[in-house]
Image (tube, rainbow, N blue to C red; front, side):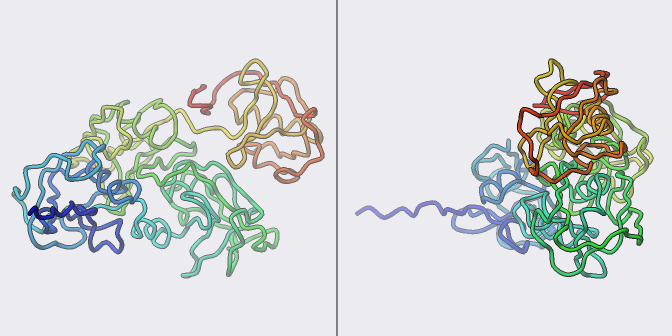
Length: 440
């Protein structure tokens, strides 16, 4: 009689002691016994395989030195080398089952994007800000004040504040501000101070604040924010321009800097692409955007230019100081306004991006000043033909037409026959991206 062969366990890898199934010490099932993995050469490509195998989203961070505590039993794998595309960790090359030169103080660990630890880091353990009620990197803005979360009024929050929040949360550039409690009404108190961020701060608690508010606010006016997208493990800080600044990378739950030794345009290209900031324009060394603080995580970075994240590039332990922190300039982020069907990108019908959909602007009631804002936002020079738009009221200092006053999204008594048109001088100086094509 034939004996039944027990099928391979569905779960041949697991993460232990990380507070949930999507973060923790990496353990592999081999010959019916769970064992650990050595952290030698353990990197983001290896972690990506584990997170995907477990259905835990993307790899967020790799940790060594038994960060989640030492395991027990055999050490099954050492010198793991995955391409990142394997369906299971067992398909990656290693020194051989049970062959290693380490001990249980060097167990490898992983944090995946769907882990509780990751959520806690970006929400409950941030330096005072979170986004609630939306998908990742979007939601109602709440500020931590005296151990209590408070909502923020739409009228007291601007684009500079938004850039800081998105940057602090590792969510890339700010994309859109939403009023009227777009992500639901908050509970508890409303933040009683006005944030006055310059836009280059690395965290919200470094922004100046004013206790002088010109109006009362209720939860009906809670502000919402859309950042560029996923949680980013790299950010650009200490610059007044988006997609420009000192390079910082998140590792082991802490932001740190990168040394400028051997930093080149291939390395910069990876960062700009990872942040959705277009192509790399320039690299700056010698702490051009000011010296950072905390750890210096990477030195002599060696990217091929095709990596999906800076963490996948090779590097060594640093032998430099914060005077050598590297910075860069990317081409820019996607614009939220465009001119179409006018023969060039600086002329045509005005359309505004809102909640992922392009819509038009009515010609009635908008001043020449609002048209000036559009031309400037697009980097298209001065207005050549002022065309009146619908009930859009700009002061002229706004960085984007979406910050001007208006009747409200979708509120109008206008037909598409009256869609506003505009012609700018066409002197391109801008940093906007349309359909991944970059215009200067």
